[in-house]
Structure formats: C-alpha cells, structure tokens
Image 1 (cartoon, rainbow, N blue to C red):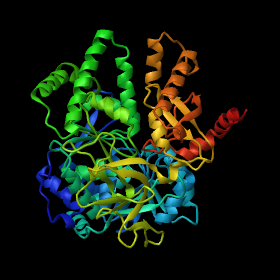
Image 2 (spheres, helix red, strand yellow):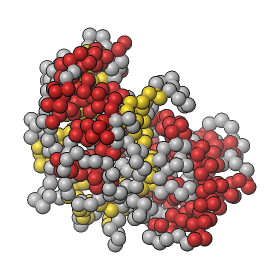
Image 3 (tube, one colour):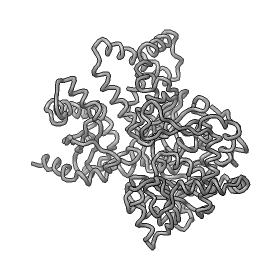
Image 4 (cartoon, rainbow, N blue to C red):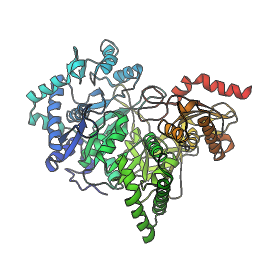
Length: 609
C-alpha cells in the first residue's frame, strides 16, 4: 500500500518533527500513545494521549531539556524501559535537534562506560535506582564527559535532576515560537538517532541514522505492507534495538498509528489478549514461545476436539500454500478455509487475542520453519523480514502478495543485494549507512568503492529473488575436518520437537558436534502431565527418553557433519536477564560457551573415553 496520509513536504525533505505536526493537525483526536500502570491489571488501567496531546507534551519536554542545557547536535543517552517518559523524551530531544541514544538496560558496566565516552554525552536520562547506581560512577570518571543525570522515578532522584521538575520547568518556559524555530532548522540529512550495536563480540559500534533514511525506509515498507489505517502496535522490545525504534517510534509517527507500551516483555501475551491487535511483530523466540503455549493448551484437549483442530489446520495450510505459489484458491478451498476459520481457528485465536491479525512479522534471526508452518495452520503467515541496524532495519521482506515460508523475502524497492562467492550477503541502497561513527564525530567508511556493504550474514538467493538466510559468518562452525556447519540450521532442526525450547550447538575445531538443550518451559509441564509425570520434567527418565528421540529425529534430517553426537539437557532456561540472550532474544554464543565450558569439555571427554 502507499500511505494515505498527507506528506507535508517532498519525501526526501521530510523530518520526524514535520510528521508529528502533521499528525497533530490532521489526526489530533486519534490515540497515539497508551500505557498501563504497573497495577493496571489485564482488563484496564490504560492511560492514553492523542496526537495533539503528544505534540504538546513534546514541546513542553523540549523546553525542559533546553533549560537543562541540551544543545543541537549532541547525543543524549537514555536507559529506560518502554515507558511514556522514554518515548516522549525521545521525540522532545529530536525536536531540539539533539540526538537521542538508548542504551540497553542489560549492558555491562564496561559497555555503558564505552558508550558514554564514545558519544561524548553530557546528559543521561535513567529510570530508577538500579540505573542510577550504574551511571553515577561515570560522573566522577575524568575520562567520561557525563555531567548530569535525569532520573525518572521521583524517589530515586536523590541529588540528581528529577524528571518531574524538568517537566515543570518546561511548562513554565515553553514557547511556541522557540519550539517551531528549533525543529524547523532540522534537515532531512541530519542525524535522528545513533544506535549502538549490542557489542556481543567487542565494544558496541555507533550507527548514525538520519531522518531521510528512516522516511525512505517507511515509504518503501508502506508499498508492501497491508495495514488498517492508524493501526495499533504493541511496543515491548528495547528502544536500543533498531526494530523497536522503527516499529515503536518512527513508523507510528509516519503512519499516525497507535502505540501501546508494554513495559514488561513477559506481559506481551497478556497484552495481546487484552488488545486483540490487527498487527503483531515478534522476534523468532517470541513466536516460538507463543507456539509452545498454544501447543501446550491443545495437548490438554479431548481427542475429538484435537481431530477437528488438526483438520482445520490442514485446510489453513493448504490455503496458505496456494497463496505461496501465487495461485488463487479454488472456490471450494476458499469456502472450506472460511468455515474452518469461523468455526474452529478464530475462536481458538481469540483466546490469545490473535483473531483480528492481518499482518504478522518477524526478524532479527532465522525463523524456525516448523514454527512458521505451525502458525500457517491457523491462517497466520508470519512475514519474515531481514535487515540490520546498518540498513535502518528492514532490507528484505515477505508480503501478503509475494512470500516464501522460510525465506526472508525480497529487497524493498530501490535496494539491492548480491551474494559473494563465500556466501556473504552484500547490500547497497539509500537506507544503507555510510559507516560507523567515530568518537570525534567523523565517519569511518564501511562501503566498498561501488557502495556495497558486507553484512556478515550468509545466505542464498533463489531463482525468484527470495533471500534465504543460513547464519552469521562469524558464527559458522568449522570442524577439525574443515567442514562448515551453520549452528542455526542444526539448532532449529533440534527445536522442531516441541519439548526442545532452546539449543546451542558447539563444535569449532572438533571432529563432531555436541549440543546444550533446554526444555521448553511451556510445553514440558503439559507434556509431563499428559504422560502422568509428576515433579521436575527434566529429571524424569521418560522426558529424557523423549529428548533422545528428538535428537535422533533431528539427526535423521541432517547430513553427517551436522549431526549431534552428544548433548546435555540443562535445567534452567536462558534469558536476557541472566546474560545468555541478547535483548532481542538471540543467543549470546560466547557467553553460553564460556558459562558451560566444563559441560562442553565433558561431552567431548565422554567421546574420547
């Protein structure tokens, strides 16, 4: 679709403030931002600002930050969750011509210090006592330019600038003329934000992103995305990630849509049950967890109900397959699918709040094909996409009119990709950045002479132009026999069994692969209950026997080099809070390998005994 909304100037001249003013003028009474208090419960407690309210709050906060001393062009660091103070401060700083930069809440102290030094930021806005304690030492560090903290939670402010006082100052000092003069001086080529990569293999790198690149990406997405007008978005990923910056801030301003902030990522499922959204974005792990929850619920149903659901699933998959081939479903299939949706699938989906979905998407890592096929059985086609921080998010995507399950789609209009001889994906186009930002403000060029950027991802392009991801180049396993193995391929094959929630494959420099496996904490209790097992599922012989069969079944689908020779079933699920996953729920392979080094060594020692 092409956006139906008025563009206040030529697309290549648009800035985010110009779009926000457009929203206040054209859609002022429509909801823009909603959030729920911690004790709001599942059925209510939402506070909502309209686009007119957001524009006014942005102006007030901009005046407050200006009074604090924030200047045009300087980076301002933020470490907050998905709360209104974060979202509104981001827009306010943008209107001043400053550059808001969100730091991951899970960042290590060394990473925080590196970003503070590299950005030369004088100000940081932090949420509460936990964040304040992590940032305060930097104020006394002579190598860090940081001068002042703004603390959002009043009780945690102490000697620092309370957010509420900043807002009060803004109310008193706000001036329409000063506000307009400030944002009207911004140009499309100016930096909108800087995103620091997660730094899993070294210091985070700074990726500058301009207003123009965001608008170009938004326009290209609108040509392939089919969404209702002013659609809602559940915002739960960290704003330090390019995906949520685009989905949760920039695209909603561009489309005048409605953002629902979800402060706790664990509450995404309950939020969806409350809102019944028309669109939903989930990284692969989220779709895996949701699928596991549905599977666990289905496992408790009587056989006759299960049979009816499986029949409806088969009809839905046939309908999806027909569309995937680019064919028009026959009248008979269309009728059967509509009946299956109305009588079986939609009532089940409504329990998860998913019966209204018209657009579902995933990105960040290769999506397990069995998970994609599971959701296709409910008529939900997860439109897998691919991109990087360096490409302003989405570079390739599937669309309702052209998709291949398991692929990450085709390039957006105006973008190009090619695959090098070693399988690495190279990209170029207007939304591809020029290079990483140095500490002195200059850019370290990252493109070759012809404008191509080496992404570090490995993949292939099929005859129809669809991109299929293999893995990250730096994560490919090279065995002692010189064979290259994609760990993601093997891990996703292992996870096709519903009991296997997480997997890590290891084998660099060895003659065979071993794996660490984690039970799915949604499916394992349901499976155990269905088999009359009490207590900890991980400790029960029947569960361990089923896991052994799962590994055997996976090995049967893998070639000899990819097969798992030994594995260990772990007792605890991995997560961002314990360090094994990134904030976007991807494996931190080095962390896991270091943490379980003795276990991995023991697996190889067993093979040598």
